[in-house]
Image (tube, rainbow, N blue to C red; front, side, top):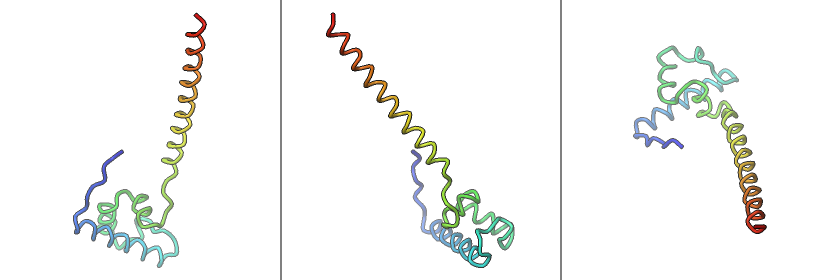
Length: 102
């Protein structure tokens, strides 16, 4: 798991300001903003620099649900892990039976 970066007060203030810009735009437009809805390319770059790619910026502002791809991947990994544990348990039971029959 990646370590979270500790933000300086300036970086934190910049993030909060960019989130406020996105929320204000969404309220004005009645929908999540797209990149061309900002005041210009400089503002778009500023938001992306502070919050990451556009979809992640919208997620940070609470304007878009987080991507589900990560949740699906975790569910698949959990199912694989359960299956592997069941296999190991069955194998352990099988080897225990054969040891006692010699």
